[in-house]
Image: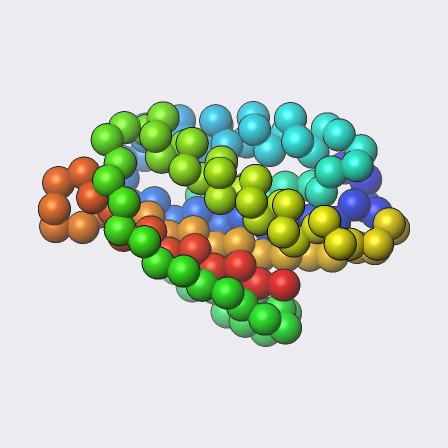
Length: 133
């Protein structure tokens, strides 16, 4: 990692079994590595955290970021691939919006926290995403 590149710390809290979480994490790590290998792109750090660590990192986000934008969505998700694509789109939009006007050689740390919680309705998830800058 080039320490001069901006960084996006992504925290994902996903209520699911560990096998599914591990598979999702591996796919997202591969995607992040592909982007981060480009010297002109930000470094992306992705972690799959439990509820406690998510709260700790949300507190860190609050303390270190000037602004935090949050959105909520209820979304049907039928399989892991669909969830992966949804998160990948969120990451792509975030990278474009967060870093497009960043001057060269400026180190910026942004935090993105995504919570994915199954609702009472089958295949519907409550998704919360907060971006701190």
